[in-house]
Length: 593
Image (cartoon, rainbow, N blue to C red; front, side):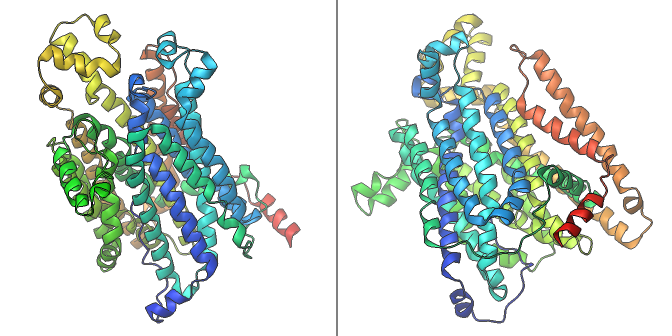
């Protein structure tokens, strides 16, 4: 969740007070809009992985981990690539209209996700528990649709609010202005899960209702200021040309290989929000943390103590454990940014990735929530070093005159890594980490229960049945399955991907430096050849996985997450052979003049 100011901003000799007082009314309104948007987004986002796979008998849609991963992967692709078009839309039609469209689309998306079960039951005319065995429910499809609406809305929102902020920050106060803005991002991201962790104890639908209401509330500030004047930037380009230029720009060799190498970090990083919620919910004992927080809040009275969201098991909701990441970033982001500002960008990124990767590797070595919190703390320091420094690093490796282009593509590496990581984690956790899946496997393979009988046990009743058969309590059951299947190895694999990304980034930087010293270096002369050479096996990998999963799965369904990645990289490969001349653009420019 880390967002810290980029050190590339112009330095100012003005005092802190003078810079702070230079921010106008619209700047602060835009910051408030951003805070509310992040509150709503993370309020849903941090708890969503748990809700998606929650048993039908406990009020959830009971998706598989693979279905969850598919939804999150397509969400990643849409959210990270919509700004390619929405940025031009904001320039042409205004920032306020982008924010207004976001509020409507996103609020509908939240509600569709939150009420996907009720919508499905209404359409099929029977409870989800009856419709699911018959294959007639629509819960997955409506959850998917709601998630994509939220992704589209978020992708539209970003250029609008960031354009509004950029328009209203004086150049002499740019560093402080963006620093305040990004800290507001983190505050909103902290408050959302804090509230959502309590709301879902009452009813899961309340989380989605409150977050949808928060998103809609962002319409109100728009009524109190006029659209500021801003320069029109190449707003006549068609959507087709914008997409072509976006893909073509990403094929620039230095940018392409940075995107691929750094994507490994984001594959690992995003599982803190996509997979860790399920891991905590399945395996972690957080009773000690819950007791400590109840005692601390109890200092301010019983009402304050009751605010701590304690589950019937005695655990605290996973939203509050994950929120330790956002809390540390709120408190320490500026200090870490100051420290890394004195380091070389590559060194800061390598140290940051290493810290995060080590934290991910050891994340599952204990079932204690205290251990998880310690790992999250180490991870957070690595995140604060690596994530924001990527912008400074990109500016450093960008050829003269292409700094802006490189900055604009920073989100692409996030989207590729996030989507790929969600797909990978979905399959890994479904077969090797999900507690319910492993409990059924144990009953069949060790206790020799007939598979059909094991599969017939409702998910909501599975663990109580397992505990009864094994004559253990819920903690004994967790420990037994933990020792038998060692689900924590998944984190070691993800951490290894992060470390591999760090090594690849170091090798990439070495090649770039060699190319800078030698104009005849193969990377300079035949860069596009190397891009195509890497794209071919990537396309074959995702295409093969898409076909293989469809062929070998019981229902022979196409995995939309794998398909979206296969199509994305195939599009890049095709466009690498297409060179649309600038004649049409030149004529358009002449017409505008």
